[in-house]
Length: 146
Image (cartoon, rainbow, N blue to C red; front, side):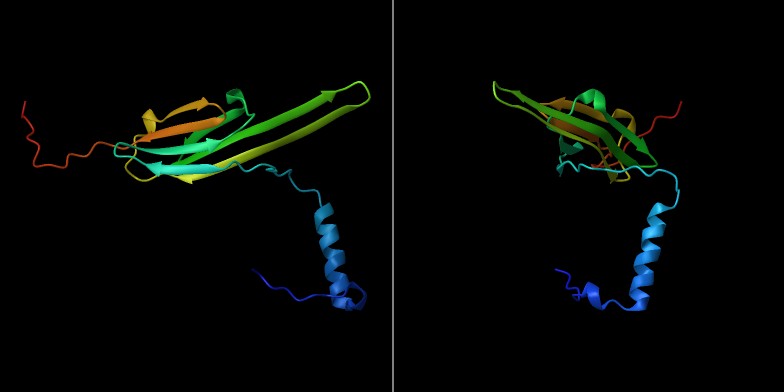
């Protein structure tokens, strides 16, 4: 746990006031809009004999709202979640909504078959299978000359 010193806001120095003032205006500067991620799905990774597996918990997320890509040996999972819970009763009406985007990235090992990566979604769990490249382990392979 990080320990920070308590600062009494009524005893702020002039320097502290200027720092606070500058931080306020830095937030107001017109910068390019940045992508904000509101939801971080839980992820389990495991290694099998022939492949690596990534399981992502995405309850309530449609498979059409998820994008998986590989660029320069980095696997990225992006998507959005839109959950709307609506209750209509005789004496009240309640709507609860949760919206958010997410992104998770993983650096792939060197010897994987990127061309044959597969993904399937079932019961709110996205499973990504990343096959390993086949390496000849036992003995010497004889190559025929044509």
